[in-house]
Image (spheres, rainbow, N blue to C red):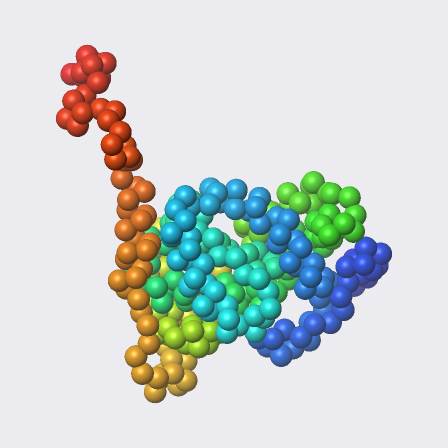
Length: 297
Ligand SMILES: [Zn+2]
């Protein structure tokens, strides 16, 4: 209580406390230390560092456009459509997706290559938008890196104070290792599915996505579940929701071909050794450089 009071005073001093805000997913009033503008400023300032820590932007602009188009299609239907959302694929092998406060959403190459249709991608992005809308990231961050570091990071943006390098570093590593609560996770699942359907995607893709991740998890720990804990009966409640709420809905988009063409084929191409551009002759195929012939057995 004393601690909370100290933060409140610190927050008031820095002009950061915004008082109560209604969580649009639960309808509950929650004490928010930051205004929504501050979330956006934090995202703007730290998203580039988070992107860098995740291997940087995946180097294919057609793939990026595709990911962003799918993300924007869902974001139109979310509870906070006024936020400028940014969806970026990062060149990172771990299987994960991240929501940074203020609408910056990252999905890893490692996760993209496990999915097999556009609706599954939409399910992941919808889930992450759910975390942004509920402002779960800020709540989880205040639990994990502590309010002092969070206030320090917030004070360093928007001209309300000098930069606090340590707090900034804590903020970036906090987002990367963040763990949502199981309640937040379930709420993001539910609302993500609603956005998915409104955007015209088949909600069964959300179940497929979870099955893919859970199957992977049975072989090795999947990073997605270290930041997004697996709520109990996840597949069961998603299926029950589809049955009860969306059972009557006709055929919606899965987008297997679109995904194959715009994502899987591109990822496969980037995996294979680079070919020289057309018209450039470097080596003649089948002819090893002399040095490697000499060192061969
Ligand atoms: Zn989550």
